[in-house]
Image 1 (spheres, helix red, strand yellow):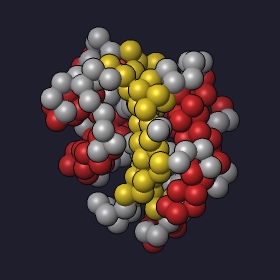
Image 2 (cartoon, one colour):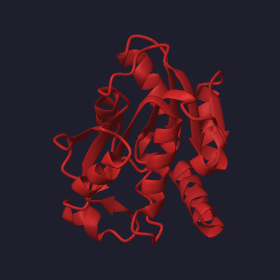
Image 3 (cartoon, one colour):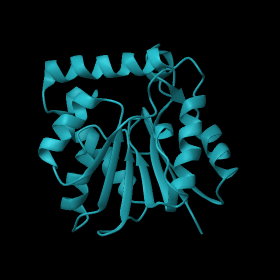
Image 4 (cartoon, helix red, strand yellow):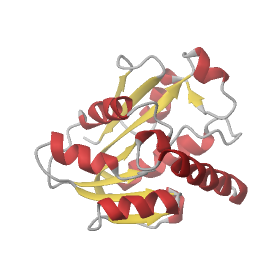
Amino acid sequence: MRIEQRTRIVNRHRDSLKRHGYHANALYWSSKAVQESRFEVLARIGMAPGESLLDVGCGFADFYGWSKKHLGGALHYTGVDLSPDLLDVAKKHHPDLALHCGELADFVWPPHAFDWVVMSGSLSEALGDQGENGRNTVAEAFVLSQKGVAFNMLSIHDPYMAAASDLQAYDPHEMVTYCQSMCDDVVLIDDYLSCDFTIFMRRQ
């Protein structure tokens, strides 16, 4: 990601945080319920309390709190996000978590460093590259996973998402084909929101 793109994202989230405070709207979710509906789908991949998880584009680290409540215990959670402002808030609410500022490509972890890697909403920024950065991030995430990767994307089959100049939408079936080039066990879930889909990549 180019420096001007990173700066734009940081500034946009700083402004949104000023307007909305500690709320899902600050992360550009339409509501907390919509945010958590995506969490519920991601968790279906099979993660369990005590397993390690990397959350790419973690925002306020809301997935940690949600998973602790709904999975029956805490994950060994690590989060990364480009926005230092969002991370400052996340650290106030979750002072014991490992939270790092940057994009995934900034960090060097060994292969299979985490049981699971998740991405919720973090692949939707339009970067003028037809989704190349998003695909590369998925590939990097898969290398880092021991058990698998779960991520959601905006769908080009939704007219609004497909036309939005500031959002990156993807073809679900093209993404399945891309993921199958790396992983034999790929599952597409596209029945929960009209604008969104989730993909699971499970290691055998």
